[in-house]
Image 1 (tube, rainbow, N blue to C red):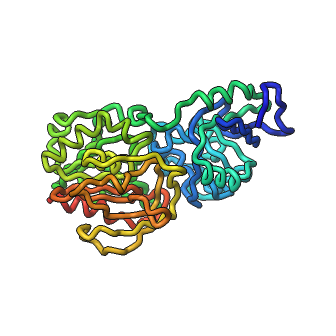
Image 2: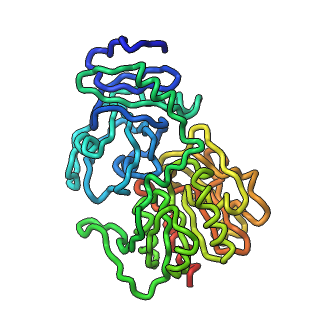
Image 3: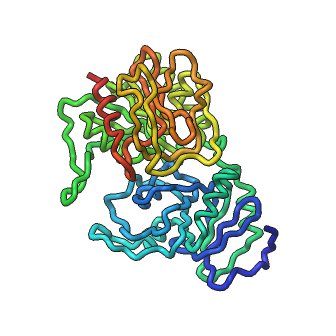
Length: 392
């Protein structure tokens, strides 16, 4: 759609999504004011919008929620998945629902404003989702002005000038700045998050490429003592902590770009026969370290209802069993590029893409999905126990 800076906003429009191809999508803005650039994706989960918005894997992304009613459970301090930047904004169908939940502390609109995230409501999210499925995830700018005044030419320029996620290392912007001991465990209603003492537990060093906190909670729940380190921590610094195993976290951006500094460390850990477990971005970089390749997906997988089947004969679990999983990724391991000695253990039943690998002769495996849920089903919690069980 062609337009100029003088194009008027429809009556009552206080928000807009400007796609890089010139398409304008008007709506009502909420949350923070201003504008933000990112890739537009969609998430099919029916719950957990706060966890989605605080997942660092959504850095530089604008999330379209396919579930139309967002905001009904409000927000609270316990459901935050990370203190660092997650999604820059979101697009929803209906006006944000008022909170109606005993755990709520802050309305979603006010929480979005406090977190500097921009929302856009009143959008035909089904049409936008179909567009993404047909044409791929577009670059765009989301903007909110209470006065309804927008410089559309400038917004289009930002959308077209943004290079996109391919080739972009975002882990450095969302990782921790220093080493941190983690002892928080599972959540229980009325008790909050449990804590676990150090005790006689195997020590896991978790490399933070943009991790969700529930991953660390599940490692502790499975029996590990966890130390979290920044994304660019060296092999020598990791080994100085004397880990029994190393965890490779999820995170945003292109795995090949983050792999420039991460893959040599992972290769060295493999050569040292260190037990390894990777999730999402960590899974992709484990595959790169083993000699495989990654590719940018057409639309990605984002939601809490993705069926994944176990297919690896050497996996040691029930082959053929299907897990319903949470996913959030726009890149994937190219299954055709897996070298000898790297077994595909899981596949997506939506499109057949790779969802898991195991490396022969090593205690090293990874999964593309998010077994820690938050939000989503808990079918895959066993993976944390599997990893900690490898550590002796």
